[in-house]
Amino acid sequence: MATTSDLRTGIIIRYNGILHRVEEFQHVAPGNWRAFVRMRLKNLQNGKVIEDRVRAGSDLEIVRVEKRTMQFLYREGDAYHVMDTESYEQQEISGDLMGEPARFLKENEQVDVLFYDETQILGVEVPTFVNLEVTEASMAVRGDTATSVNKQVTLETGAVIAVPAFVNQGDVLKVDTRTGAYIERVK
Figure 1 (cartoon, rainbow, N blue to C red):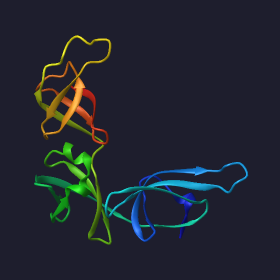
Figure 2: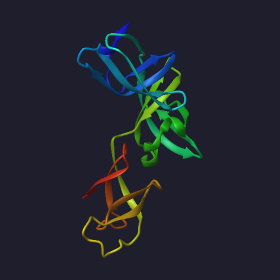
Figure 3: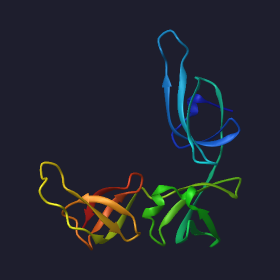
Figure 4: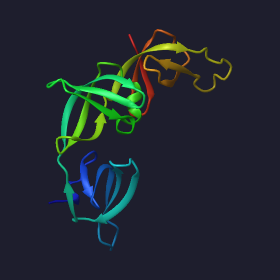
């Protein structure tokens, strides 16, 4: 059995009988009071985020998960189809498990799929940064140059993001999949 000192961001724990991913945690030791750990946990069954605190040194059950590299094949409605690169077995993953970063996935992109008990999919980790081509770019509105001028562009995956005014159709951009933010133009 693990304790609160073994907590790390991103690990999976069983908390109140339900699997949760540790999104954030902080060890707090107020003056004359007992130390405690404040945790922000994401429920892996319904996606809700809860905040709770436990006494420092409390027992926690850390769940072992298996991470398999899979290839994203295609999207059909709200379902994403992936293939195991070793066994060539295909699986369908719901959009809820894929999360917001899935909108930046191109076909044949590598993703890491987290499994519990060999069969239950807990989640998907997409690459942190991807290079995507701009398929549609509107003209930037000139005039307000005291602050940076941004415009909306559509990427090859269909995602729409805000970018600086100098970005044109056909440019390849580096995008952060966690935030959907433009990072730089790729030469």
